[in-house]
Length: 112
Length: 116
Image 1 (cartoon, rainbow over the protein chains, first blue to last red):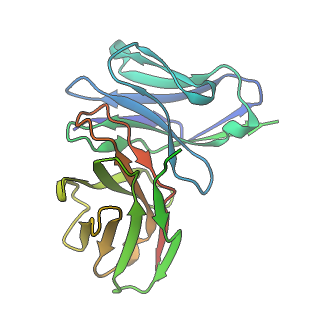
Image 2 (cartoon, rainbow over the protein chains, first blue to last red):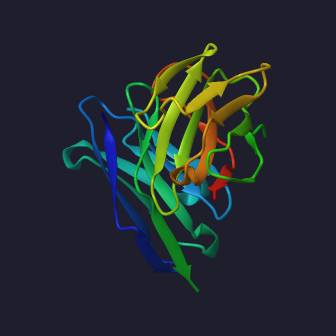
Image 3 (tube, chains in turn brown, blue):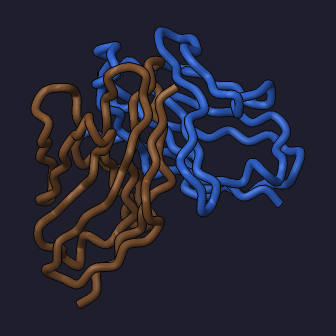
């Protein structure tokens, strides 16, 4: 089965700084990858997804992620962090059975 | 914008009691899912449901769990005899049903289950 690993359970950046959240995947078939965000006391909201079209995927709120097969990575980036970006971010892979396998999550803190 | 809703937002129960968690998926969606997230841990898949039957389930989804779509709008998760370790946030999700792995799943806000 496919799986994802998120490196860093907690990332802290200053407002305006680059955001980089790391995700590596393991898959025996071409993966379909997702990033979800969870704001406090809310459900999971889709940020973006990779489905084997363009390797650079643009999502909502200025986030993007690049699929790199050679590195088995799908890192999430945003050029300039805002206070409202503080949340938990989950990388996920769609299993061949169409269920989602999530990473452990990365909590993003944005300092003023 | 249509969204998945879940009730209640927080459920407290005694160990050994039955609980039913309720979800209303997005109306034209065909696939439904339950996930859980134990505090501080990752989101884990429990079960997927399509065409009025379970399509996949994880090893977590044992005989204590069952799902049902009783009336064409609700999607429920029942835990027959709750254990302390069932305490978690339970998320419902639905997807349109293009039946491939690229289908986006839309998540509800979750029900926090506390078993005492």
